[in-house]
Image (cartoon, rainbow over all chains, first blue to last red; front, side, top):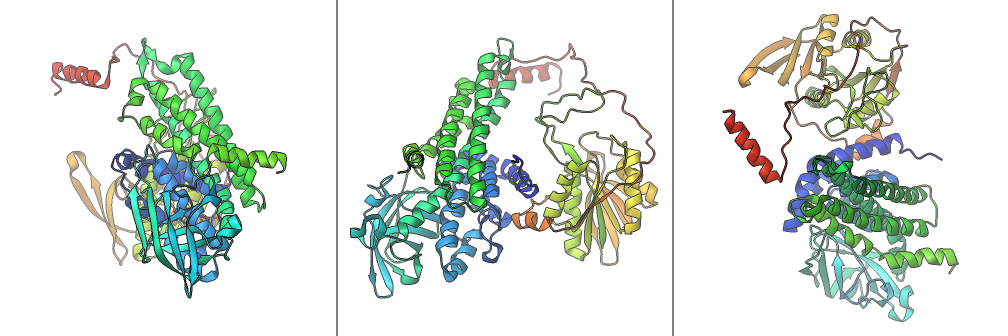
Length: 381
Length: 253
């Protein structure tokens, strides 16, 4: 057993840390307030290879492992959770399923676009009436000659308003329930596809979270991802992988909260001394540091399992996402508490971080869905 | 053009809590993070820019323990071609004179046309190695370089910044040693592909016998807490007002 990152993983960590601190941190408060999608940052990140880290070089990617991706998302989210999840979605919710389930032509067409940042990806699974209950989706696509004709609506789609390539799920055979769901690669600009309202969200406000509408949207048959009926399997496998990165996002945000809390508690003086001298503050800092470390180990373990070629890592990925997202919320709460009144003010980053943290317990499977996956693993159901 | 860049691994000390090692002669490395000395990263960037303009190769050299290979790898990931770590036998802490001697002995046979290094290391701040190295190699030297252009004939025009922002321009025949000031360029970040490619670039270790030290650190200590420091209390706005009135009362504003 070895708890060290490899030499390359350390370089990724150092490079992304420096980039995030210098380039992303100064933007984080502004893009939260203006809800502005961080295109400028994403172009810089594309040049560094951060938008297609796990995509092989031949398709324009960086050819790195999942631990490196987790480390990168952690460092980005430490200063800007919005940019963190945009990166995670592009890599693991869009590039990854195209890489894993796409045919050669799909890979050659779409992966270079996603890696270079020419197009950003979005993953369209959630619907107004179907969240945790994926099979409850209403969207459907029927074959018509060389096209599938897609009808339906998707909601709360991260990157939705700014993406160019969407992985969209819809029933092709509703009678078969989850075995009748198919996945499609849909481009922005296909007739019948419109972006609806921009959600007013509590946190991760720069992620162009939007509603998508499909009215007789014609998708070329060659854009079916996998086979008809593979959609549910593709969605579940993809979510197993991407949950590792939401775990990494949560660890990053929690670490950012600890960074802020440590700095503030050394500077802020009350009763004639820095508040870091007080045991109640020290207790909160110690709890934060310990739970962050535990969450990080769970995330790296899940990523390591994926890298080692393990076929089954759903339970470990769910544990990582479940635990880390709750750690993020708890660390953000404590960081605000340590900042006192200033923590409640928009002038301090922890106010944004507290709002950004909450969604991590909700998206890509709520804590309750993660518990379900973990319990099924325990009970062998 | 054959370019050598001398770099150093240093602790990132701006926000760290510094502690002194029990030996009393160096900082404790616990809880410190390390990286490439800031001005060295400007020197590396300048070398990469010259290489991109006129062709050639960039060799990185450092003196230090195995952990110092981190900064060499990062330099390779940014685009340097090869790296050398000098690990002198039986030396714990080298002084600037010894570092320069070790560097000179390894760099001389490489026959470089241009040697760049940061103007000062952020940890010891001695700013001696570049000057010393130039002397040992018998090369001209410019310190605190803030701008340079390499012509195709192998001449370099370089500028130094003097007090009050006055620029001093030189034309220098190569080979030469320049120590680079921060701000001369914008150092690039390594890319993911650069990091992957760095793994297959040559990184050599040389373990020469030690040379001659001229300085020995006697003791490292924090200055005793003075009685003149005044710590302002209150909200940022209140503290700012107090600072303003203090500055005004001392005619500093």
